[in-house]
Image (tube, rainbow, N blue to C red):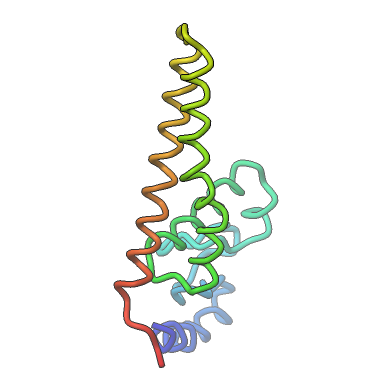
Length: 141
């Protein structure tokens, strides 16, 4: 993949210099100079992609999508487990405590329990996805 990027970047270097296009560092495709995101792969290109409030959300989404869609590095795998792993045992304990100490949950308590359960499922799915991506791709030795 890196060779493809390098080849595309070299191929588009003359185009970059001639037309004043901005070449994507990820895929090597030319983009207009006023573009904040690559039109081909969506990678953030300009400063506005990181500083504009709305565009920074798209930049963060691209980073998360890249983490969870491809083969992550060992550091990313450990980092995601450190961030989300502790929630797996803690959330059920919080839910059990709330149920045991509040006989009449009411609509607010039920909503809170359902959001906690949703958070638990989301953490579990993200950890499952990144772990299976890590183990299913061959490692370079």
